[in-house]
Length: 99
Image (cartoon, rainbow, N blue to C red; front, side):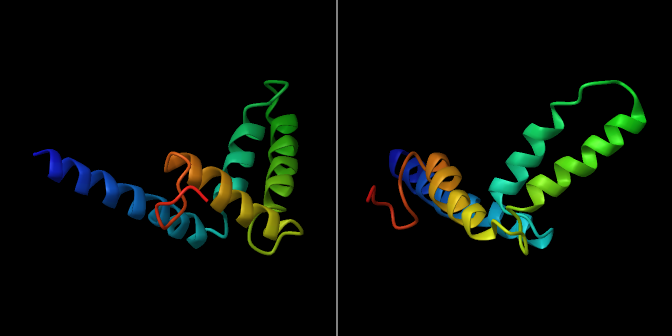
């Protein structure tokens, strides 16, 4: 039973971050742009739908800079791989090592 748990956990660490990257890639995003958009979306100041619509547009523009085709696409991809994916894997890289 313990061996099957270890196998499952190892496969989960390998495949789930890859699946997340592929899914977000279909929408032209990476984990950095997705997280930035999510956190910026929580900063709405008013309940006015016109102001909120403007703020949503600005938020998409800012987070889009980290997505595919954005000015900071390289930074977004690097942060997605080295920050978010590593944190999901407990600090391990895609080969299972820490360095």
